[in-house]
Length: 493
Length: 106
Ligand SMILES: Cc1cc2nc3c(=O)[nH]c(=O)nc-3n(C[C@H](O)[C@H](O)[C@H](O)COP(=O)(O)OP(=O)(O)OC[C@H]3O[C@@H](n4cnc5c(N)ncnc54)[C@H](O)[C@@H]3O)c2cc1C
Ligand code: FES
Image (tube, rainbow over the protein chains, first blue to last red):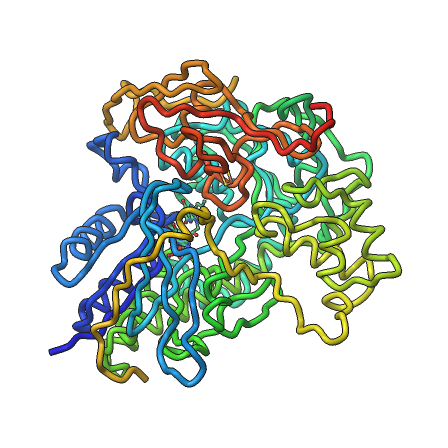
């Protein structure tokens, strides 16, 4: 009997659940992650050499995760490929059915001698997650300014704290677990600053309150974090943010100001606080390059673009499924439900199975919760008010706000490609992952043109197009890859 | 104070430490097995190790391999993301700069 071969990219909550469900449906699974260990961001594990005896003390839901991880990784039909980066997806020739080929590099991150492989799976599940979105402000490029996710990953994954006197700022519920981890690891968290005023946060959270209990499996976790902050006497202040980081060669102090509901700065409200680290997040950006490479349609919402999926997590691209934060920022529980659905259907399971109803409900509640969060923690339209002409917008190329303004209002027009070439914003090593959404938003505002003016004769530029999704060295590219053909002879639908 | 590692003796997760040594621009830096190169550098009190185009100092920003601020050379391989690369005992790390020729470091 031939079994369908499902490749799952990403072993976070979504990918691990997808692998488990695909195995349950009878498929053969290759589970791929660039990290050393499974878990993704939410279940980031301590390194094996740490030999931790109480890893559960750092995570919610550790036991369930640990059981699932062992089950999946030890399964006879599962091949677990850690330390493996997917650097490209290659679409099949027109007319040939099937998901794209998966190009892999196995070995230490960015190392030269990694081995190259090509998978030809019968179905593909994309579960690559998201990263922090951070809006620029003067001084955000100083060492000592971290994304909130970086502080979280270092504390949870390595037991390294980013500093002793730390301010956590931005918007969203993620501020709370980050502050919690820093406190647990012994930092002094001076303040936690939610940029949205209390009224916006409360209105968002309490909208249709009767729906909240069903949606918010995360609520007890958040309440716990809030109690933790209170216990440590850490103030959680709403309607305030850091509008500037200052220091000679690293951050030494931050300027905190009050914000109105639209995030305009209340003049005269500024105060200065000495710190040795600042952690910032303004939400999450999905990692879209692989979905775009596969040809998956995206959907736009107020907070950005995500992979469009149907009720069973199918993307617009035959044989390709998406799950977790690349389809919407809804937290680990929704990611798990999406992953389980995607994996089951990708593995050839019957999508009419009654048990899927509960999964879909759990996913839909997660999504409803995400919409609630988006309303409670929006990005205020007046945030560019804190930018100065010399504020760095593109960290890689150090393009400043003034250069972007000149380019966006110049003769050549505001086509994203023109802006990129004139200012170099987005052309650096991160391939616009960090500044992309910001440059697009600022360009649109400065030029007064929606999505920038298009250059005639050229297709619309996708900000998420990165054909080389992870760095590959020339030597590695030159070596012939090992092909692992598909054993799948079934028709997928 | 600079970044640091939670001391193993008081760490609630109950872990052990196997020391390792790397060199950074020739200088010995101590870390523990399992840490990333960035983690070793941070815990050793180094907040920045790379220079951007203007010469401005950079270290870790995103911590998960997205921003490429933390690039270093490891054993003669350029452009390795320090936050993603596990440190190995004896690794020779060299810092990098994107400064254009003729630019004075700030
Ligand atoms: C740094 C960070 C820390 C976070 N910490 C928390 C937290 O403590 N608590 C919380 O509630 N939420 C946290 N979040 C939010 C978190 O994103 C979700 O709760 C949850 O982890 C999402 O699950 P996921 O499976 O969709 O993606 P993720 O958990 O992000 O998993 C995606 C996986 O895909 C892998 N991957 C991506 N691209 C490739 C590629 N090209 N090749 C190979 N592998 C690839 C990644 O290595 C990763 O392991 C964090 C987010 C970030 C960015
Ligand atoms: S800190 Fe962003 S890539 Fe390493």
